[in-house]
Image (tube, rainbow, N blue to C red):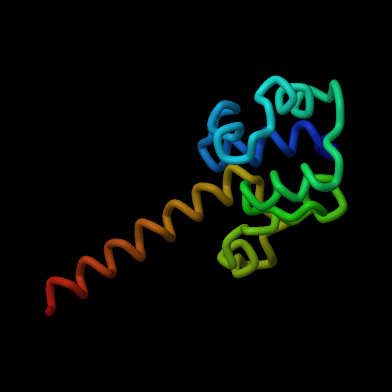
Amino acid sequence: MMSSLGDRLKQARERKNLNQIQVYERTKINNKTLSRYENGGSEPDISTLKTLASLYEVSVDWLTGQDVKQSGSNSIDRAFFGGADQYTEDELEIARAAAQAAVEAYRKGLNKKK
């Protein structure tokens, strides 16, 4: 089932670990207005969508459901066997975390050799 605009706005905000007050502090979009957007009570205009997409590092197309792949997602999503679309968001999140941990461990090993 396709997520609604409000669902995607909330998902994108939460992925950036932001609360509605922090979004207000960075964008001046009132937190009550943002809550209405996220709950489907109203819809943002294109300028507001662009502002939120920029803050959340996603595309307007993704927010509006025009693009099913989240903009700003790591290229690792595309590198999975058979493509990232065969995995759930939870599985992709686990893979991203594992890849990040592997890179950090690798870098620590390089630093020890210096």
